Image 1 (spheres, one colour):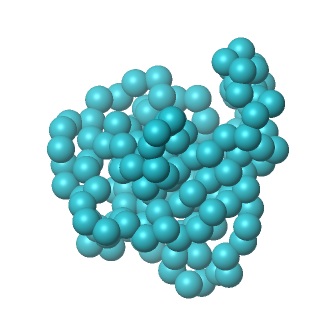
Image 2 (image 1 turned 45 degrees about the vertical axis):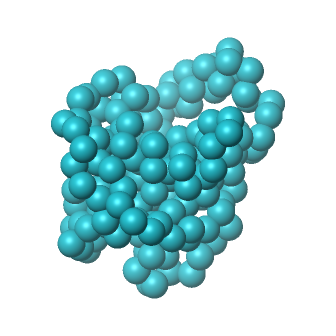
Length: 154
């Protein structure tokens, strides 16, 4: 669960860089290989999440998803990725939109280095996610597994 302090700090940072008022577009990716999913734990937000982040100017959402996976985890997504859905996220602002992809192949490109943004990465069995998984991540895993209907909200 995100603490009030974490939400306040992130909201202040968004205001400081001027994107709090503007719509944002992000890309996240579920990397699933051999029955395990790759998740990240942020230094600024509670819980385990899919790798992802903002779409840069001149970049497609798929390119952003691949880049974010590599930057945050050291793993390079291979081959085709499936656009699983587009969601409205109200986690920090009411203006965030998340494109969500599923990748079924990846290889380790470089070693992971812990930092403020990404404190830890881990591979977890699809049927045994970590106890501290974020609610949105848990919902997406259920949607991928077909045990829950897709919802439009992240």
